[in-house]
Length: 165
Image: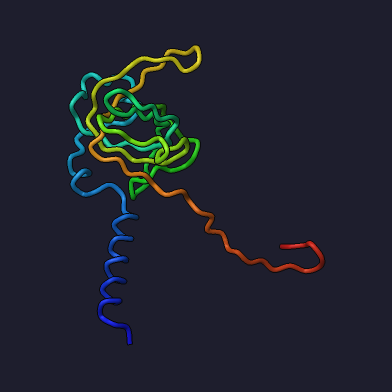
């Protein structure tokens, strides 16, 4: 029989695990007011300044500033759990300007994130020689997603030496 303290610790660990694996909080999700697409926001951000949006993507770079941190994100569509779909279907890039320190070691290039935040306008910068308009988001909540693991079966059937099918 398992002691009640052990049962309690197991239950608490399971709850913490479930909370950690969840997506964007209901509180942050309920604040979203922007209903347009990323392409619409990029084309014309000014009418939407002050609205709350949810976007996700892959971290391209992190820059620590005097008063916070800037994340450059490659936008990716979100799945039903608000996780960015790690594919080649991007509509562009956006900036996340946080007034808090976000450690670059915790957000290395390639990290998948979902951001709920206030639309603050845009900033034009160059990608190589090409001018590019980056929508700017001030984060309310940032969800860092764990790296995906390979879920394919770990067994196979084979006949002969070095042959599998």
